[in-house]
Image (cartoon, rainbow, N blue to C red):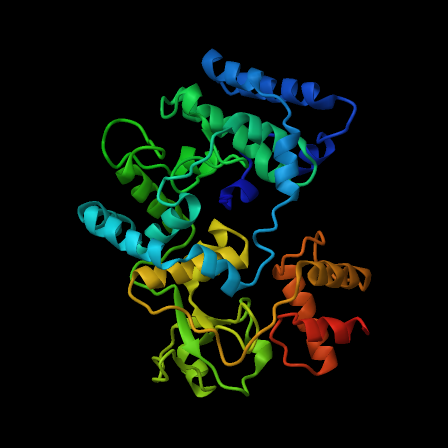
Length: 400
């Protein structure tokens, strides 16, 4: 799921975040009152009667909220998730599609600087190359999630752009459907990004992210470029690490030059020296000091983490792109790692929350807040501060 940074930094004519929170679910105005308010804003924006009819027909869908609360797919380890998603079949098909659409990919890379494997990996993970785009009514999904109090600031700014797509003639009311959370098309754009970053690369006068492969490829590249993608630069590199690194430096918020990482013994996957230059990189250990290890470059830290805030998803997408580009399957790491269970992570998050850490909702996902809190506790305990909560660490921390 993609939420453009522009939505958070710029006003786009809708209510402020505080107003959104104040008008979300279970308040006196009710969902009908909320929808009436959105319709008033849409009318002020000049939305056509055709698009307004789609908005008027939207209803609150409790099934969408149920699915939003049940997102446990990211509550797995990197190796488990990548094993299911970054398959050999997707690598093979991705390479075949690159060859089939070589002229388009070459032209897109020339214009936007994003290489074919990066685009193709997102294409694979988001919809299995357009095979599963979803059939949920987009506007209904967006108003439901905007009315819900969990993340209204992420979904309400998407409503007017979704109506723009109809008014532009890019999607008919019948085509305005996709994933349950409002994403549209073969690489699952949110409406704002579709509206502002979509590219008519086939030259037919509209941006069609459902059926036009050239538009899909170019729009995906354009969005990544807007997110900070730097042409000609790497994104992720699997590496081999030593047993005595300064583990507290293994943090996506900390970068060092490759020369510095080389001094600490970081080598290529096959044990060869890495380039000892000034290229900045963070050391990414998605399963801690004993699991797979990567150098994450600025393209990962900017573009990938803006595409999807889940570290498991972003790492898998970047890894799959390296596979499509020719890298071997990922190593399991230096030693076997036992991932914590969903229940163990929830218990850990509740414990950390009770001890003053901001880890967000106890959702069983090892996100940025949980990793930061784990690192802080590891430093206090004298454990290697790799930010990964093994079952042994959780048991020790919680006195079990």
